[in-house]
Length: 83
Image (cartoon, rainbow, N blue to C red; front, top):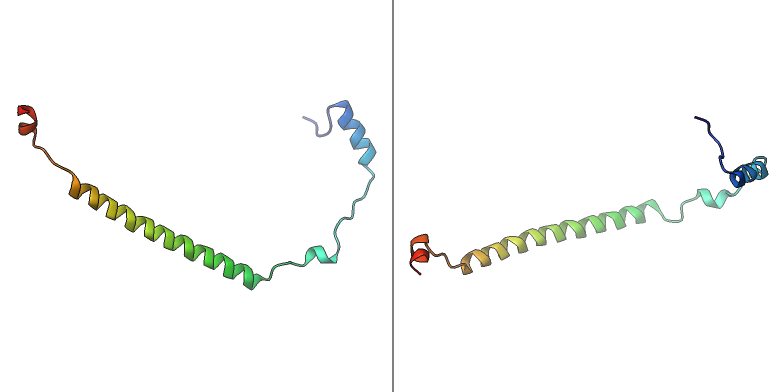
């Protein structure tokens, strides 16, 4: 199995750009635009919000289960058979 272009147009593009050297980064590109402290603060805030949402979802689910179970009307199978 060989590595390289198979199609004619791909072979032409490889020949055209094989000797081209690209230098597309400068010193500004290597410096972060966002400080690490700001990023950590944003990540911690997002994680805290998600944790709170999960806790609220868990509590809401248990409350809903409780409401449904209290409002359910249970009928014994003997009463159901007579009806």
